[in-house]
Image (tube, rainbow, N blue to C red; front, side, top):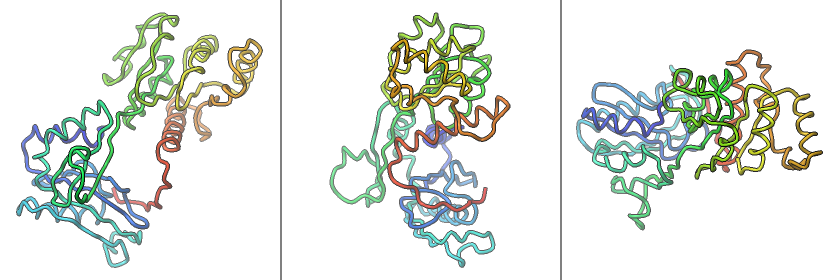
Length: 317
């Protein structure tokens, strides 16, 4: 699954006219949150989404007109019974945003945002110009956004669970690195080409320095002894979240041994989610992967989305 900013370099290379639509603010319930984006092409294609259904259709129509006139515009839409009643969009909120038919002119900004090598802040000024916020201080802004590198996900082990978790995590904006001492498994035959690999003896693998961005850890090696070996090191690392696969009995045995051997304190062990994953009564490997990735999403949101989310109604697909 592509991140939105991945669409822009491809759209620029394609050379077809497009307008960028952004939801700059919401009040009440809405199909999408602030910052939702979509590219509207002259041939009717859409990349990204502003909520789907009649809301997106209305903005698409305005984007089509903006491409003809080459005039940027703002929009304020109230999602009440009178707006798209036949499609069932009665969220009751208000959605505001901007439409930029000249977005391609900011190619340098889009290319840098797509790379996401560092935290960057960009925005749309009141005159509809797209600029870096730090380089265009002062004046009024229609929209501002901070774009940061994706959170890292370190997976200890390249087995079935890791293979099922990785594509889900990559599609949900984690940068995944798989660690294993088995080159026959830790390769692109079993993982996406977007996966990073660290293949060596565990003694050397556990010397890997932490990434610069916030990191999550998942221990899913081929056995309890290897899990304990990885956990022995990773429990002392500054992970935002650390989970280990296993049963409650496995947790009790390993954790008790760690405390007795003074490898870790009870407070440190309390930070480890074991069994990892939300309790959705998962049994199969794909179900277990879903439960794990769901917990990763939950913990990432708790760490970095400090503001309460607005109520969101169902959107048409």
